[in-house]
Picture 1: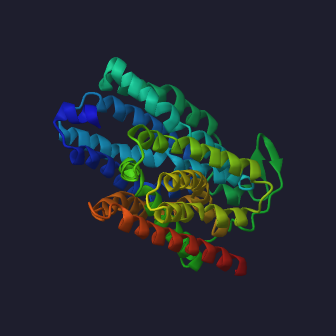
Picture 2: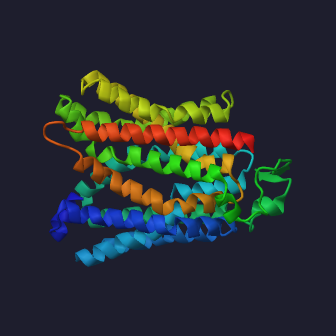
Length: 379
């Protein structure tokens, strides 16, 4: 943000607007992208999306006005809708219907290292060669790494592959028998939307998205107010990325030993437990450290739970479309939660009211998941 603000004379609110436009555009397109992937267009979408990211980053390197800046970031929302976790999770569910959860855990485990690697790398590049030239390097990664991988690995996609492949799963070139009873590929997506389980899971996903999106922008300030030293107040939030990866690694190692429904039920409780530790600790450093540990572990594993519950409890065949329907509500909650958290802050009470709000929201979200699990078992 800082180099862009200096280059264009923008305020922090003006530079943040670009990111909000990207999130909104990504959310608006999530359903359509998911539906196209469900119909077998994954190779085209993800390859074209990577090329689009590269082209937009090159264009970003030569922008000279705020209007151009906003246009680029709005279009980046289109590219992000084609390339990030939601389309990748939908592709993995189509390709590995019997092993999609394990595949998603592996992908998100590696993805969790992205910020750990690229935040310091890009910061170093901006110091070494300026932010515009840094854009060229990131664009080259899209052209030379991401797009070729998508083009090569996503060959052979078929429309409604869960229906056409029937009782076979093509994994590493071998056809293996699978049970597709839960896929129900012949039913319309609108039939699944009439299922109460879909709406319960939607409540869970959107509310937990709000609870986890509200905190990052305020984390350093919150820890400072607790009395934590400046160096720790910055280092502790930076460690959350590593803690998330540890959580995903633990989920990967225990995945075959713990029932998936039990895992989903208790993993999600880590977020409200972390918030409760922070509130009951009255801002003490120990309470903050317990919160960061529970929040980091929970948020890391929550990515997998949110990405797989629709396939586990509603439909594998329509996972991309069903998750895509939540694109706009999730984008709104992700954008509104940090703002609401800031509005509820006060000089006298700090973040206390905002934290209580997040605790209530997260508890309601977890209860919605538990209710969906119970309803799904009765169907």
